Image (cartoon, rainbow, N blue to C red; front, side, top):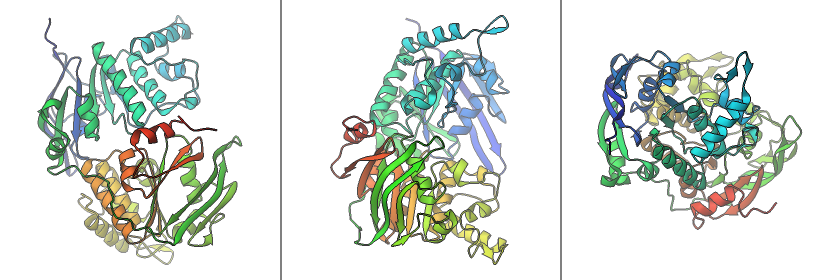
Length: 507
């Protein structure tokens, strides 16, 4: 039997940005046909290393070998030509196109001058059958579940001939049943000879799926281990030098005072269909109300309607006894509503802008960010320095652009921006998505401490451990409706996942 060769060798990879060494003499070897996990804190250099391997960035120093050949990638096109494909954490699909159209986009098959969709359809069916990921080529992507969309992303890179896959946080938005299905598919890909680089913060999953694990810290590789030789706690210690944090909350701080009351809330989309319908719940001061659901079941519509970004077409919203159903977003923010948005890049930050400008967002008309109608730059910089210090944001200072921070530090800046304003209600949408265990622990601590001080929290998350650990009350949203109210102390992740996917839900 032939010994597997090295599919990927990265030797002495170094990459610097102004004021930051992202990769510092990094070595990584991945054997052909293995699932190789890469773990590390935000800012450890994982993303930069994978962008270099995929041709999105060029290293300042070092050598890349693919199957023994030294390569120089100037763009992802060069990497794709060498059989490397990347599935990003945030799916890059066109919802209004079919599966087939998404798969061939940019790589359209031709027979002479004409497009040859029949051969593409045949190829897609063959790939789906070979790798255990069947899909209907003619189905619109907007009708697919999150797990099925991920299949489209994986098949898209396989269709282009990739046999080295980079998967960035592939389980971030999946429920347990979908994770099991993904892992089954990954093992099948491995059996067919595909090499997989698996980037994740979920250490239990890494231990379940990986053949080898490389740990990165502060831009360097610190260890490559076998899952058989380490447990979750040892892996966390290699990553961050400390025990793995948990979101578990033992004491109850729920008061009798209702801070948010939502009754029969509904909102229609542009087509006149209900995105959310008949949503009713209360949040008391000192209470965390969790909302679980597969992405795309109305969570974003619920957040936007509570914030006044979109109008309520039915029902009412009251904050501290005052009706705010028709209030503007600015008035709601001024009344004490804080928001941790689901997508920090698109909704939470101005990436090219300095941190002091980002710290103002949503509060820019208030002291200390403003003096009358004018921006108070000194006040904003001083407040940003306070956020950096108090919330442990690793940054050179208030004038550095937000894009220079790691994902975890960007998230801590957003959390700090909201918490320092002392809101009475915090709407937290996926507050720890895509951040490492250290930053995750900091965010959990902030939520727990604020809850203890009387903050009402609406927690929307795809992380079931987070929901079960932090929530006092738990609702499941499915197709825009609350379909179950559960006790987070007694419900299991599998039971919760079943409700989230509609199993056992009578409609």
